[in-house]
Image 1 (tube, rainbow, N blue to C red):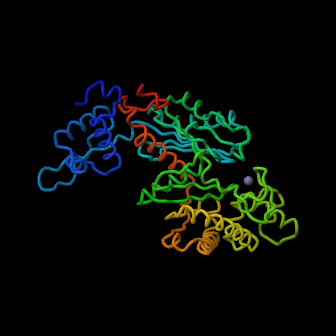
Image 2: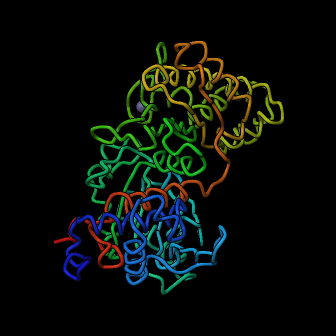
Image 3: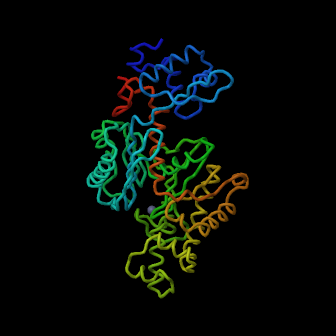
Length: 420
Ligand SMILES: [Zn+2]
């Protein structure tokens, strides 16, 4: 029997295990009626009924519509009560902050963004983030925040929630990003690398939830997120996938990280901007010249140049794609992904970029590793990091920490302490 005390202490008994499984079956849509739950779990009718009643009582499930009849009386469907909590996602880039809130099913309810230079340091940046969060929450007040996810443009130690020597974030090394959010929202907080969020966002779009996938973001900087069997591979220190600072042979370009010849320094958005500016100074004829001379050129402008057929833009973007393709091919041989997704602002260059990457990867990778490999562009949607952040929170809440907090009906700050 599920007693008050097992619920209160969240003990991982068979009863608790089956209760949590049933909530998750309904939540993911795998089984949404009592008979279906019985079929999937092998539990008897009486037990299923009892557990479902418990889940309804705690507040996770509610009664839904009547389902399809298979002869007799149509069974009543159950639904996961996604509306009872909110997930706050704060996606920080090098030059902007994007904030959104979702329901517990990941549905984006409100979002906003602003330009912001992450080099302003952690205190000022987090204050600016909080202001944006207050703005979006004001439009949707009264529902408690169940989880907060913060994405940062650099390596993050996922366990401590601290950035680890992030190359473009001076003052952030070892900063405790988690605590200010925990204190503000009294909810568990997860901090991760921004490209990991994008890789998780991509997972929500794939039928194969257990895919081996590489998400390579080429924006102002370059980074990659790795999904191994559907799980983020963060590595020992959170640095996995940080391909922006691997060495490109023969390059003498100085990188933002201080090293020479990094992939970023050759192929990223800021490197392309530098190259166009240099070419314009040397008298190259290009439609980008007026903006470049004003020092206002961005990667977005360069991709516009590609689309309007500007030869300099096309030449430089193809050059970037060849170097990126070369580095990705090394990953392909090591990691053997099923899918490579190219995202970030370079996405607007479309096939011009993708075709070069494909050619390079097929040329340099082992035939076995590329036999079924898909190389594709990400969906071009600025809300993608918010989707990925919600996916991370849902995974952490319902797959990882659920047994520790479910008895309270909602997660609290530091899920690891809840069972104590
Ligand atoms: Zn570097």
